[in-house]
Image 1: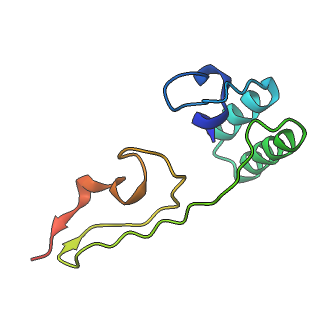
Image 2: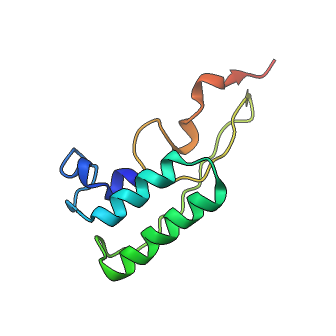
Length: 103
């Protein structure tokens, strides 16, 4: 969500392509990222959800469901919730440095 909505990233490549600018969302995004307290994080993301109802930056028309297939000769892979970002930060490659051929 941070790269999609934070105003400081507006127009920075694929980040915040809509140039969304909402100070309340920025503040909640920052708070949600900083806190390690689950209740504070939940409150921050609740604030973001409500702000997006009142001031939507995007209209989401679809949900992309990914399926990855990998040969069973590798180990060290772990799954994660994929936010549909591009590159090696997410998807099945996020921990590629831990992959090892099975012995």
